[in-house]
Image (cartoon, rainbow, N blue to C red):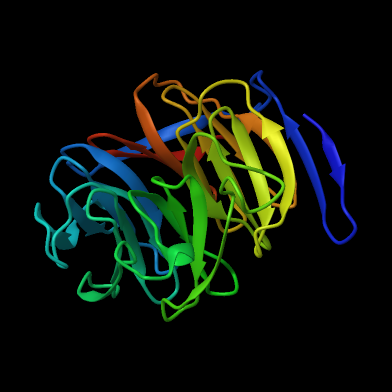
Length: 281
């Protein structure tokens, strides 16, 4: 890993391949019953929102696993979801990236459809995105879409108006190659691109590229804590400005999908459930 000194932003990056977390995480309980979950998000109010590829749905659950609301179902109209790959629960909306439907659905906190960002047939080529892989919202309230068809990031304001794109073959210093997931840090964006974690500022300026030791399938920032998830391992950085990743001590070797660390708790999404852990003494 490297240390990158920038004129306006300092990012310290360290990646430990060994297990340096001396305190193990103790299993508390397992909740949920999903067909084939693909992503989850923890809302500021403490609810889980889960995208289930197998059921073509997004679900809202509490910490005990009770399902409060669901939305979607296989189809091609605005209310349906075909391949929901990613979910982001922010202060106002719950956003879902629906790959095959080429759209981002915006829901209220009860999963009532509040709007759709669909730009596939726009006459403005710069704002077009197809096969969205991931979605996130910055601290400034802008919506960032990881465009799987054009291998770039397209971003919009709170109302869905186009603001810019970056990461494409003709859009700047860094070109995305195999983008997978995106998450918003405090004042930056982190993108999984193949075996690299790429950092951009909120305007799309390239900051740093962090080589990763292995293939990770998810990057997630919650309450300033960043997690990297592979199928069998989870790494965490407790400070989004100081990306010092350490491997978590989790005894189960399951097929992990996503992970969140918040409030002294670890939440791991598998294809079929959410595993909840508490850090040991």
